[in-house]
Image (cartoon, rainbow, N blue to C red; front, top):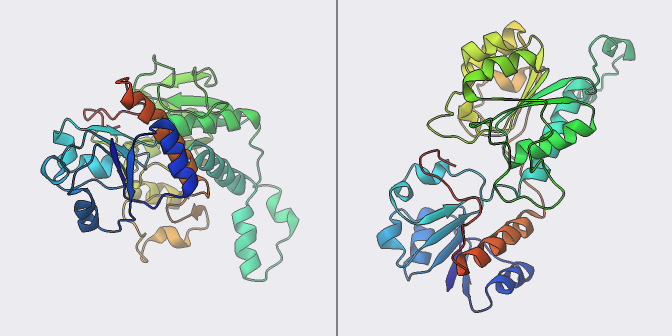
Length: 335
């Protein structure tokens, strides 16, 4: 079996892979452009470990049978030729659960305790009086968190929110199938789907928004989720709610969100993803006092490739044994 990785593998990553596939031939080379990816796989391989796929996988990567993405989302791949092939495609869903769930709670806590306002005052060398905060700070305990997209990240967010004493609601494509069928490290998430007090389907998003003080959007970008939350949804949202988006920028209608932030219907937003990235300098989001924004980094952490290779190794064992792969993408749904 020949494995090509378009990222540099450290010795511990190679050891993890060899432990799962002792006879594998591993070729790793950092690829920063599509041309570099195409050149690397042109001699053929069985498996790819990558963020990118070849432009013409059937002819440009002879023998390729399976692509293990290093990203949780597959929208950047399914918009190209991969969608029309029979090559198996799996995502890295599950490896981001801890950092992104922690990021989501950090954003919510920063907003609830107005830490973002204090940081901005610090940069101005301004001492804010504590009395200014008495009427604007809330506890997370006793509040309701609505999670839009109950995958690995949403489930770990739910577990942490429950520990903070929050009531959890969840929306997923099939609200009757509550189990997590993807890759999940032991002890994390909500494998059986027992944490949410109530589940909602896609057609009930206005209902979950009406009941939620905080909203975490963890949807992948697909034809079904583009602008999933728009003007109608913001009109229905609970007044003063705080929205965190760590999925994809395009699942929220950014213009509608900005309007809701300006008129006060939406209390605030914690944003790590945007419709256009980098966020244009002229975007009003930069200067909004009720917005906390970061440059699409919520999943970043030092152990990223360690977790990715653990997942890859689990799938390599399944691949060698002709067993179903974890996190297999269904082109119909886009994830």
